[in-house]
Image (tube, rainbow over all chains, first blue to last red; front, top):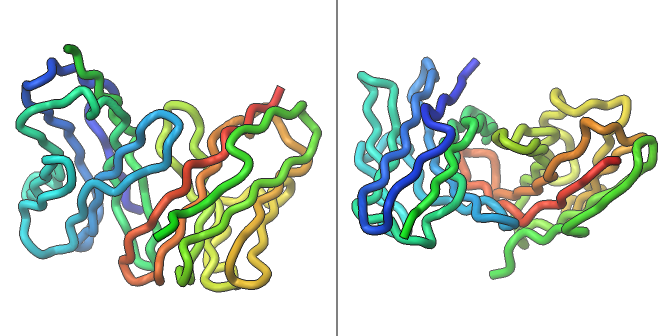
Length: 112
Length: 114
């Protein structure tokens, strides 16, 4: 069975500095991977998705993620954090039949 | 385009009471999902519908949870009787189909069981 591990439960950054959220997956097949963001009291919003095309995926709001098969990783980055990036982020693996497996989440705090 | 709608947004009940949540997916989306998100965890799939048929309900606690999507559009999730451990956010999502289609999520219903 596939699993998704987010290596940090909390990340704290200063506004204007880079953000790195780490994710490892365990699919034995070629995975379809997503990053979702969840702001307080709001639904999950898709940031970006990887479906075996380019390994560097660009998403909304300046986020991007790089798929590295050799490291079974799909880390999310943003060059410069904004206060509005404070939220919880989920790395997700999709299996056949559209079945999603979520990581445990990383809560991002942005300090002014 | 309207997103996934859910109601109510918040619900507080006492244990052993019953509760129902409603979801209206994005128009034209054939697949509908209900997830349970316990505080501090990622969402967990409870049930998946394709039109009005159940595709996967392996994680649904069927002794107390039930869900239906009678006309293949909106859906209702019910808990009867509720337990303390059912306190969570219940998320509804929809997608066009089941072929690696993006799932779009509603705002969720936060349930507190006292």
